[in-house]
Length: 295
Image (cartoon, rainbow, N blue to C red; front, side, top):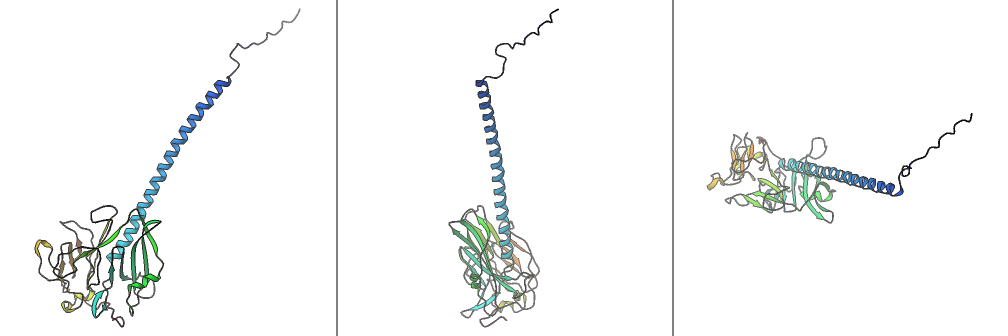
């Protein structure tokens, strides 16, 4: 018998596989899907990066303003003689503020430091810089900070300037001033903002101690820097200030009140508070710088 021959397998016409056109169309579709997915991923990555950048900028601004706030609140009203007048070591202008403060406890050497915070604008943008240098009691000059290297505290998004709240004359109502001249007392508050209108970023710092420590003694009214204004109040709650006698006397103004005895400090208008804290004036002596040395 003859063995049957295996039937040949035959594929129907058109079932051999993909044609070249179908393969090209599939590749184009897959490419479009991949491009769309990459664009979506790129958008997500950029959104995350933008959020991180803004978060870092906000953290830097908050930290820098907190550093400035902490140093200004503790500014020391150290007295020295200029043209035979007792004035406090403080210089305030629109673009910079200089003051004296107690040295950090972990630093050995002179007990006081001179500080300068300046708003600098150049081709790199706006920034707040800090200079700090030891203050020699024999030569109490805040210009010593010019010999120190500046440190960038915070980079700003716009140009800011300093203003100072207080009274420049004995019987005038306290108000904001672009400069604070050499006075027997510190300003009541320091503001760092873009303009007079409230905006962002903005910082208002009430100074905790505005008169020398020895103003709490019995001879305070006759001591330089202690008599800030008449003791009677003016109209509208913007009246005078009176230096305390160490037994709970208060210093009042339109911006807030200060107890130079044992009370706290509150700055605000219509019951609002910009800061808190208490300052007690000792009954002993206070650092006072003369023209020939510290006393």
